[in-house]
Amino acid sequence: MKTIVWFRKDLRVHDHPALAEAAAEGEVLPVYVLPEKETLSACDWWTRESLAILMDRLEALGSPLKLMEGDPLDVFVRLSAETGAEALYFNGQVDPVSRSEETALLQEGSLNHLRIRRFVPDMMLDPDALLTKSGTPFKVFGAFWKAFQQQTVPWPVPVPESLSPWPEADVESAILKDSRLSSESGWEEKFLRYWSPGENGSFVRWEAFRDNGIQDYKVKRDYPGIDGTSRLSGFLASGNMSIRALWHAVRRAEEEGDVLQPEPFLRQLAWREFAYYQLYHFPSITDESLRPEFRKFPWRSDADGLATWKAGRTGYPLVDAGMRELWETGTMHNRVRMVAASFLIKHLLIDWRTGAEYFKETLADYDIANNTLGWQWVAGSGFDAAPYFRIFNPITQGKKFDAAGTYIRRWVPELASLPDDAIHEPAAADPEVLEEAGVILGSTYPEPIVDHTAARKRALAAYDSIKGQKG
DNA sequence: TTTTGAGTTGTTCGA
DNA sequence: GTCGAACAACTCAAA
Image (cartoon, rainbow, N blue to C red):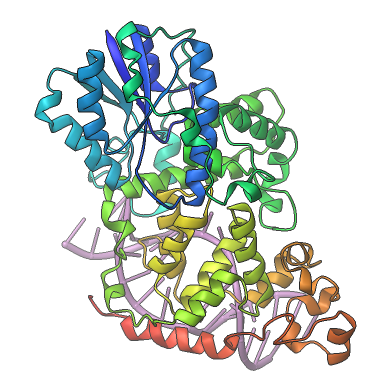
């Protein structure tokens, strides 16, 4: 069998069901289809770095990756005719756009000569097999997690020992130059300092976390000034690492006695699974609030407020630190993501979709399922959401989770000289303290763009206004 | 059908 | 400074 293997958000060779099956059956032509777009988002940078590495890996295994550009359907119609391919294999994706691409491929008449197979997506369990006793999808995490734990996560499939191409597959006209990858997106200069994308980089990062971090994960993950998270999100989002492989790696480390407390981390992996599961069963969640009453929510339009939030100049140090970390590194610590998102939604009353859209462009670890669930959770518009009256106080959150101001000093250097007890609320600091630290409010660092207490009251009133409504 | 228990990550206020 | 209650009901899922 001569099989085209279509790579998407599964940029690896380990635990790649489509690749493993194609390799077992015969010759393989690995293909990646770049979309035609002018502006590259932060996660496009990660994708392109990963592709360069995947190319080397596939070449070493025997069949180099072909880079194509355009609409996948057109590409495969042309490519299969030129190369005489007999099959097209790929791992399924759960996001709605990718699923409609898959459906179009499966239905396209001119591809009828191809044997097209969709393999399992990057999930731990089959979302159709994990349902309530009445056969409906779980809507809340607690029940989902309970049912999840009764199941067994499948073992990863092995890396093919070698791949063989077929001669006609080497169609020069269909191949873009490798140089197409050397992106000048503007992101690389910053991001290369923080990340080593690619399959191998994911293993290196996992081992570091396993040996130093996962043990204290439960507590340390909440403190943005500490390196206490896995920092695996980008690798999982791009598919550099398989979620099933990671799950079993944690289990193996546990069995070998290297990890005594794996549950808190495994539970977070289950949250990722739950986000994919919800997106699979409720594809409209990327665009619509799940709770109908939110369609009447009195969102404000506030271009200045939005721009200030994006720029990290809200006058709330923890929020500003988070937004600047995002711009600089393409990620944001989870706790700070919640506070920054909450600030946009509740303090500024800006629609959660506006925030989600900005994260889509700027997150190197952008994952549509996780991002959607996170924003809906903070907004309170999801099935399993934060109560409306839970409005983060960015000052209190700073004092609680960044007491020594480590994180704020790193990302908001103009406040670095302030003492710990002033750094979370410069606007309330003694003028002498400010002067000594070289801080001039409204000049070197902004005054708060909204008053917390007033904004809190306004948010509670807005939420009160949709209570009990049906949408 | 009805009942029951539970629900990722908080804040504020008053004793 | 510490601690418990109030904040609000509603939905989900299983018994």
